[in-house]
Amino acid sequence: MAKLQRSYNKRIGGVCAGIAEYFGWSVSTVRLITLILILFGGISIWVYLILWIIMPSANNYIDY
Image (cartoon, rainbow, N blue to C red; front, side, top):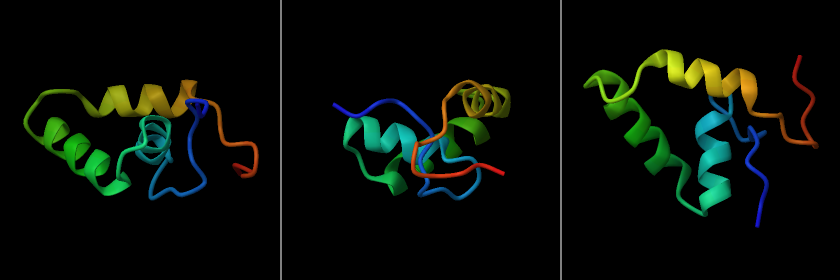
């Protein structure tokens, strides 16, 4: 099974793509669910930012 890490296939921070790769889901689906949860108060943007900080970056990507 893959490690939970930020993906090099990213739009902003790679968090959604990393979660999608870990669970074997579509990246678009995870991004849509995240957007809906943020807009309707299910989770906060702060949760995304915290995950961005604590999730390690993928080994084959250099984060500047």
